[in-house]
Length: 237
Ligand SMILES: C[S@@+](CC[C@H](N)C(=O)[O-])C[C@H]1O[C@@H](n2cnc3c(N)ncnc32)[C@H](O)[C@@H]1O
Image 1 (tube, protein in one colour):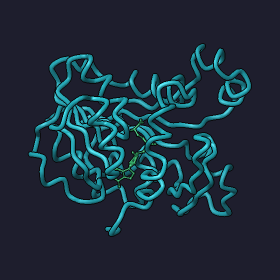
Image 2 (cartoon, helix red, strand yellow; image 1 turned 135 degrees about the horizontal axis):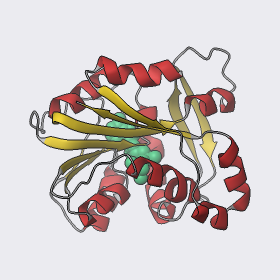
Image 3 (spheres, protein in one colour; image 1 turned 45 degrees about the vertical axis):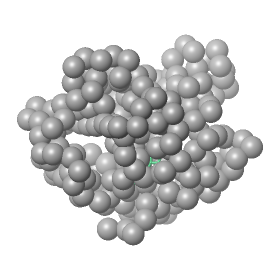
Image 4 (cartoon, helix red, strand yellow; image 1 turned 90 degrees about the vertical axis):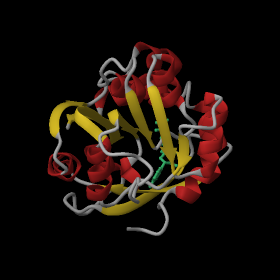
């Protein structure tokens, strides 16, 4: 297990800028998020783990719909922002998802939700084993990642089948610019760990942008209408 999450420094530097645009940034708000949320069951009265909560946008959505949410993120700044946004100090905790989640009981959640986080974790087996452990039987595991085909072309990899550390400078959160490291992997290395952890795969989405995306960013809309950027997955325990 790595000593420190690979993207921790980048997210510590980016936290405020990320939080200030995430509600309206088309790739998140009008593309990835509606698709990932569409995979969730009715969350009213359900206990949900928001794994890699960032500034708390998903947690807030869940709480508004009556879920009992526990939020976790590796970044102290993200946790501070999430506490502020959610107006709470309990049910939220700084933790590295590469490490055992010893503070969470077995079979204590109905849903584990992890949007746009797994790209920063190389070996998914330990993390998925923990998600499986904390979920009740029939519980939902919903997550999203950067699309393997997008990453393969964007990072100009010379070996599609290799899981490899890549990175690029993120300019979408100006004036803050960070070098964002992540792991690029093949489609089978994205899907098979889900089943290997004991989950049953239920649905895969390759999101399409919403009409709001078109209104906010017509050029970006054209681009994401023709090529995949994200992959959203729902599995059951
Ligand atoms: C792209 S942001 C997504 C935040 C949130 N899920 C959303 O979609 O709005 C990625 C988040 O993953 C967190 N993260 C990265 N590696 C992590 C790890 N090993 N353990 C816990 N959180 C991690 C980062 O701190 C960051 O908040």
